[in-house]
Length: 463
Image (cartoon, rainbow, N blue to C red; front, top):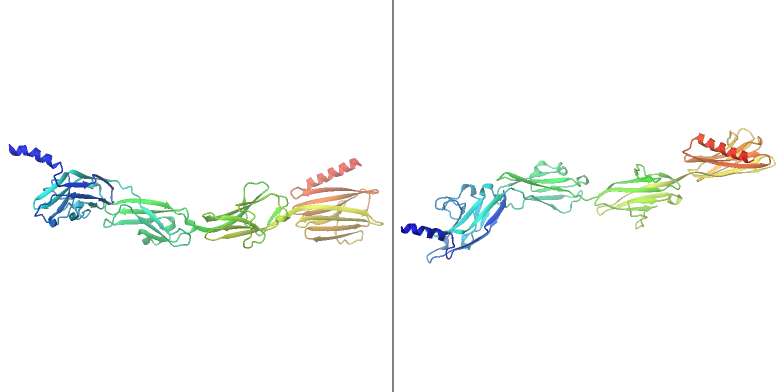
């Protein structure tokens, strides 16, 4: 009966700390599959006078195993085998420093469980610390790789991407790396399986993605991370667009050598540069000289009313830390004819008239008597026409000797590609009556004749 009475006492004592024996360890440890974890642990034990520190052995067991017969998961005892599934992965610290710390590599799902620590201080003197146990939980791998960019990511500059997996440790199963991305298509495929990737980005790579995949060879699980490349590059593809007559949309100018604009029109010029980060855009008028002050520091240059003062060269400059670029256009102001005259006076034997017009480009002038055209340098002496042009001005004079019948209409016409204007003198007894008309380039001849007929009818009615 005595042994039966002692069993409950022994069992109860095993669940309590024995005097001189104490264990300090984290009781719940969580680690992701394939990663590594270090579990700090320290212990104290009762030493006997004959005990040698060299005889100190420590063990970690699964709590459900019989420590007298089962293999431990880790030990410093070279004469004791460990479980095959934990061999080389569960590593113990040196017990002579009173450390029972456990390092676990390449964690596997079947490592999940509860473990107990045991110390042997001499021959057959073992003590299992049952009061504190280590519970290990191995969860699914959710850890993402870490991608670092060494140095600035600039176009044309050699760049290194470094991929690592936080939580992995040296000595564990090999990590297999793979890189994927359109920016890497031109690289040697062998270089895409290293943790460090070297490549030279281009402007077209900006905004694309690069993915690092890491496969843990032990458990055979894969994790990945994707980053978006932010590539810096100098301005390129500088273009100018224009909008006028209150049109909101801009048309890209393919030819910037000359841009003709009708005088008095509202013009907007848009400058666009492809760069990252965005370049500082400025507008200059005239010859761009160093340190010249810009007329605008905005993308859009507003010219509310184009006149001869705006004629000339306009330059858009894109300034950027990696380089600058500029583009220029030549603005020419065009206008329809503005007619002065005709001015006529009677001579003793002829009628003398003069007519002037200003336009851009310079207009052409001609005279009509009735419906007949009076050409310059005629073959007869009935009239003389003299014309000349200087810049945007055209002048013409007429000396008419015969054919001055009352009721005829003498007209001076000015015309260029942007419009036409004419003025007439009615030959009446003892007087001259002037009539003028303007014909824009967009109007047809029928509209112009209708306008002239209306004016002539009004004059006849008044007379």
